[in-house]
Image (cartoon, rainbow, N blue to C red):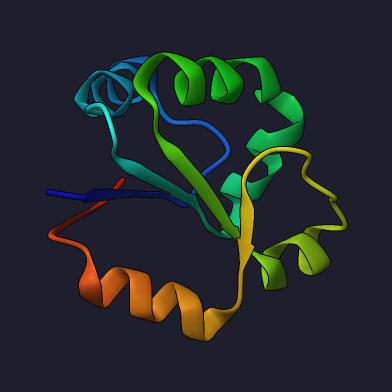
Length: 96
């Protein structure tokens, strides 16, 4: 069962930050949207560790990389249509 976690903020309060990290299960998908795309720069090592330790898939919106002027070196870019499809076809969707 694929669980999709969507983050839309650069940072959350510590308790929420720990909750979403701890809720990731092996094989889950993490999608960075809106301001959360900046995590690819500011939290690169944390994201890389999550990918390796929990075998998660990392995605982000290509439109957000253009809007925020970043070029992530982790994860896979999605078009808006691909993001909508992923959201609709995931078994569970959690927006943080």
